[in-house]
Image 1 (cartoon, one colour):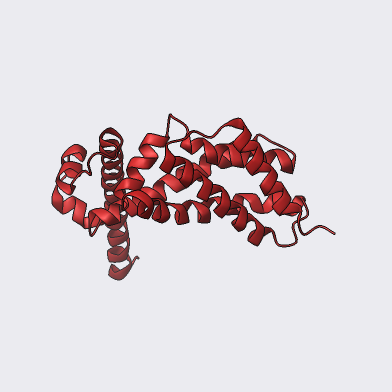
Image 2 (spheres, one colour):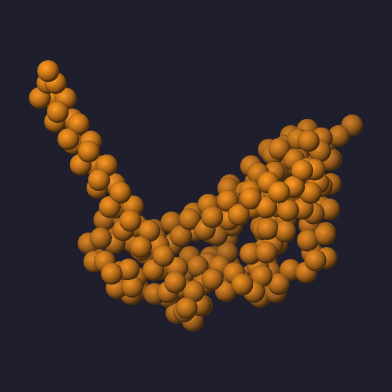
Length: 209
């Protein structure tokens, strides 16, 4: 027979699993609602917590169950965006074989975030993260940590003596340039992709004998 303690533990775990799924749904609704409000409002206004919960169809209690403040939600948006970007970049790189082509795909996918179709939303989230340069600075650290590891493999194939360091250097430089494009509301040209790709390749090959 199963002891009462085992039954209690099993029921408790089942209850927690159901609650986790419910809470994950709440968080997703809050993030999606906040992102849409920021996209529509741009850098002209910052949505309040009340606006976000209303758009999500949830309560203040639900919001503060998951986020201590709106700043905490914006941090989660930055992480969520970085995770999505990492998936997109990895997908683009996966279509290429040669390491040089994978590096170019990485650069192209990252700089595309300053393109007309996504730049306005990106700027709006960064604006809510602090406005102007402060928001851009806060928004740069998260994607570097997510995106730099994607360069470890191709950099090693290209002869880098320290793929992790060189990939981090290339990621910081590229995402810093992306932040500059976003700040100036300028869309990168093909020539920009060429120059950044050449820089990344030189960085990767600098340790070869």
